[in-house]
Length: 146
View (cartoon, rainbow, N blue to C red):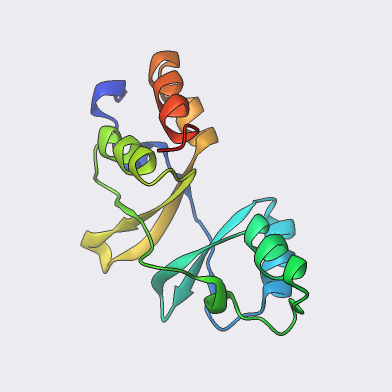
């Protein structure tokens, strides 16, 4: 059994994360989120991570602005460089990235297998795999504005 000190991203991630193609519309993204019972999806363009989209993005940055989700593409909401972590990264690196960028979901890429998306780490994954002290420290840093 892996000890908490030697956990890697691949040990705690949710496997088989599904992407939404960058060209797909937001209504289809919302349908996929409902089907998978998730609140976020990685956006992929030619099998490469292009960003992340959340249910909140769809509501706040599309619907609330009066835009039609059947006409807005997932890529239209992708902003900046997507954050990700290598599957072999130590859990401390995972926590540091999530804390530094105040993100609650982190895609996991296997750089040894063609840089393909292999999973995603969410707060629930952290809660299942880390000590209470690690979780308390993480929550304090991620939910406190810089």
